[in-house]
Length: 92
Image 1: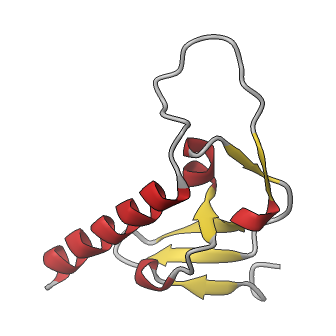
Image 2 (image 1 turned 180 degrees about the horizontal axis):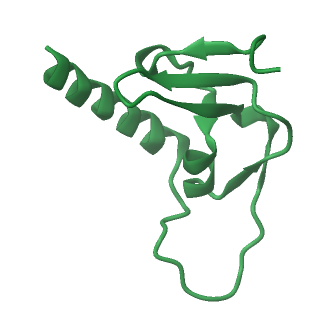
């Protein structure tokens, strides 16, 4: 299945696709399989990307968590933009 999936470099990921980690930080859970992959060649890693349109709100659990789970889409996209600027500075 992964052979047919679209692969993106971090700077080319569309604004509607997010990793599982970012969805968790927004308090969302995917409701379908991943639709693409993002490749980080310098890390030799790939991460699954999920469409934000195929998500649901996570159920709130009792207890304390150190992970922030109320990020907005705008905050995540802004963070993505900052990460790319840092990467360009490191590579350039």
